[in-house]
Length: 110
Image (tube, rainbow, N blue to C red; front, side, top):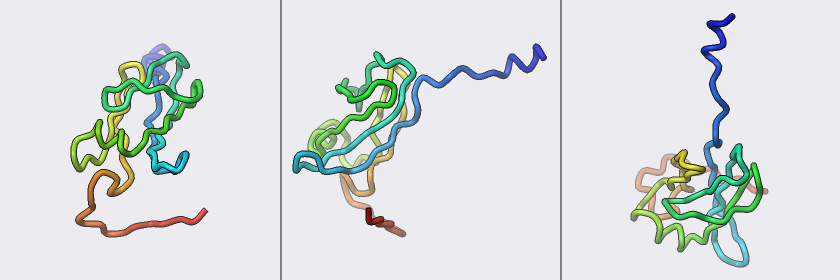
């Protein structure tokens, strides 16, 4: 049993963030959401600390123009860091450029 204790993994400091495009106050925004163990942990997007809503489950809305200015041209991901632990979050297809080889596009109505 002592051997099994060696295989216990520590709790993750944050989950992988998720992104989606939303409209907020008549502006197109990227909604980034995730979770963190410590509600006081700072969150940054592409190296810029951002104010988030929520405590352990957080979210932030960034105008697409801001995401564009903080990202490389034609970027497909953003780097989201929570207390130093970084994750690459996929951007919605074509957000910062165009998709040349789009094999399929799924559209869901709400």
